[in-house]
Length: 343
Image (cartoon, rainbow, N blue to C red; front, side, top):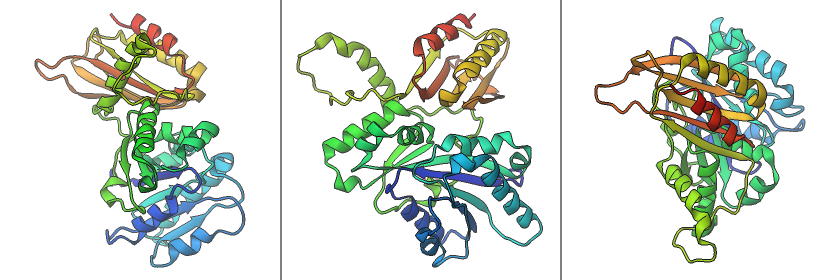
């Protein structure tokens, strides 16, 4: 736990992906932590409640009547505020919070609550968004539901459930597709929610750290895609996975020249004003003119923060690297604008 703040994890995933199974495992594992669960599902009756509380002393708070994202501003804020208040007064004991969203929720507004509200920001530290993906039904869900694509785009970690029920080719195609949508998120196939607690908690996905994890295969894929158009009809040995033109996409920008701090601040400010609602997650480790330290920035929708990272090591390649994950992002505009901010 950092600075006495309560770590919070957002658990999301489309209907039937196994969120409750994973949550039940997390709650019943002998880790010695007390976990408060904020659940929200449609409808008055909630079977999950009985499942979850069964063998645990966890405090399960339910938010019924509609999805989290619609009632987010007030419902979630007041629930979190109430939990923190009761904890301060010694009425409740818990070490961390897990918010399980309905399968139809966009995790964006849930994440924003932790940054937009001062009271919540002073009590909680958002750790990560963990997304479950159902290997059997994911293809259709990603094709037809933007919420499912957003859940993937927002993730810090992707757990693929029911992988044993999908063919090897289908699973490989799904993994490739997820990587194109979100190269930041570590992917792992899980069986019946069997995930080590260390893979769910303390991921530090929202930390302003100088570590920018991008799936290395994603970079190879990007290079390959540029070449791919030249051999129409020819046989080639890589899997043909790129038939899906998802609206949630990602791209990486790299530069060896330093950025002008003033130009970059102006450009990112204007980009966020225009495209913020479509920018799911973005992060960069930057080489700024006049600074011997790395500058780290990241954002969710219109909210963006930056910090000074460690010094560039002697002999280290001062390479700026940024990753953007969003809905129909204008890659050309972003790339041209970033180029113009270089010195």
